[in-house]
Structures are given as structure tokens and as C-alpha cells.
Length: 381
Image (cartoon, rainbow, N blue to C red; front, top):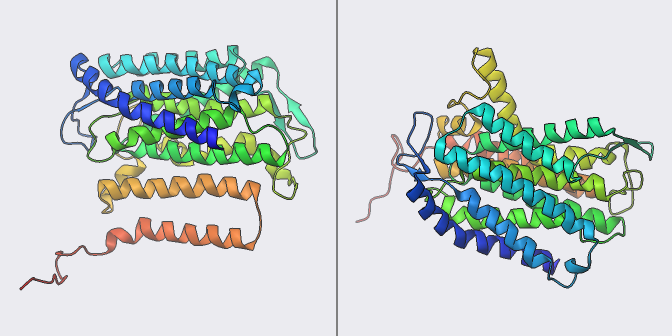
């Protein structure tokens, strides 16, 4: 655990420092977010935060190779992690081009498919679907490639769409990465195998990169991650999950501290990545439905995302982001805890947390602020 913590800290510190340089480069190259009708920022903000995050991920990978425990792990751990970073660098480069030159949606989609295809070539892909009978369904190379590209591209675009408020995407993905690290770490522990897995390594580094970027990106933001960042962290998040099916035998996976393996639990290595990003995934689904019903392209921008709705019902920018973080934490950590543990205490805790988040989402904006009409404000004598 200490070495994973060090990986997290290295990624966070490196990203934090490189963000300053990325901001200067963005200003000099003209990679600046102009103020548009659908945006909530009131002045131009530089892009290219994704370049700093990529630097943090690479630094964490390099350091991990020299740590006593991780350096002695199976070569496949760093081989898969290296493949993810190469694909991440490719999709980050596509994002940089978009941040500077504003390339069209079809070209950007082509870059996403190319990066996902690169993962398949390097062996980071779906290998099987586990089932409840203690066996697994092996995928053909064509099925594996198709499902892998579909998952990666969907996740990348989900994160890209949720990146609409200062600190929102980095916080949501950072929370999801933290939950996924817990899942990978505990899954290895319950199955009595090495704790050094690619999923744990990448999720720890990703959580660190998001944490290091957040101080520069929280409202009022000094730098945006841009498409270079949103597509990068979306790819790393989805690829982290893909590595599980290549490093665990689906017919032998055990879930839960008591060694139980309920029928639905064997699908968690495949379903968990979706649950970790259910907030941006839901936003993506609603956006596609909304735009196609209106006769517009699914990629056409608008101002009706979930975070825009929170602003409309009375939340401030910071509070809207905090609410989205709470929903992300509830869903991602809730899914992980349910898959690993059981009992009435866990159930009551999750129910109470759900009620609290719902109340904060829908009732808090209706509470009059001090100084509002009809609310007495004490006056100092």
C-alpha cells in the first residue's frame, strides 16, 4: 500500500508542477478557451492541462519501476501500463490539436478509435465474459476488439462531455480511480494473489494526476484540462478496467471477504467501470437522446448537461461541482463496497448516504440565503 501511495503522490506533485508550464505554453500557442454562450466561465482560460496530467502519469510509471515491491511484480504489469501510456499519449496529442486548432468532431473520433485500436494491438482488451456457473465465455479476436473500442470511445466521450464546470471532470474521474484502486487491491487480497496489478497501478497514478491538477482547475480555474486531458483520463480509466480480464482468470475470481461469489458479482470486472463513470455516462446518454430528438448531431454542443441543470435550480458553481462529486462517490464506492462486503451496517450506511445526497441535490438550493428577501440578517451594532 505504501508504494501505491508514493505512486499517487508522485503523479500529484508532478502534475501540479507541470501545470504551471502547461499554462504558459497554452497562452503562447493560443490554446485558450474563448467565452461562448454555452460556457459558464466569464473570461478566456488556457487549455493543455492534459499535457501536465500525462507528465504526472509518466513520472509515476517511471518511479514505480524502481520501487522494491512493484519492481519485482510480473512483467505484464508494466507492459500493460506502458501500452496504456502510449495510447494515452496518442489521444492526448489529438486533444492538443483540438485545443489549438479546433479540429472537427469526426477527425477527433477517428483519433479516439485509433488510440483504442492501439490498446487492442498491445493486448489491453477484453479477453472473456465471466458467468455465474464458475466458467467463462471466451471472446473471439473480432468480438474482443469491437467491445474494447466501444468501451474506450464511450468512456472518453462521457468524460469529455462532463467536463463543463471547473474541477468537475478531474474530481469525478479522480473519485472513480480511487474507488477502482480499492476494488483492484481488495480483489487481489481476497484471491490470495499479488497486490501488484496494472489496474491498481494505473488507478493510483490517475487519482494522483487528477488530485494534482485540481488546485489549478477548481473554481475560479486558472487552467482547463481541455480535450487533451478529458480524453486522456477517460482512456486511462477504461483501460485500467480492461487489464483485469487479462490478469485474472474469470472462472476463479472470488468476491467478498468471506470468499462468497454471488452470480451477479462475477460480472463486476466488466460492469464496475461503467458504474464508476455512471454520472458522465448518464450525461452522455441524455445528451445523445436530447440532440437526436431535436434533429441535431449527437456531437452538437448545448447548455443542457447535468451540471447546467444544477446551476439552473440554484446551486453555485462550486456547490454544483461538489454535488456531482458526491453522486460520483456514492455510486462508485457504493458499487465497490457492495461487491466486496455485505451486512446490514453497509446497507444502512449506503441508504443514509443516498438520502443525504438527494436532499443536498434538490432541497439545498431552495433554502434562502442570508440577505434574501424575507430573511432577517443580523446587523452589528
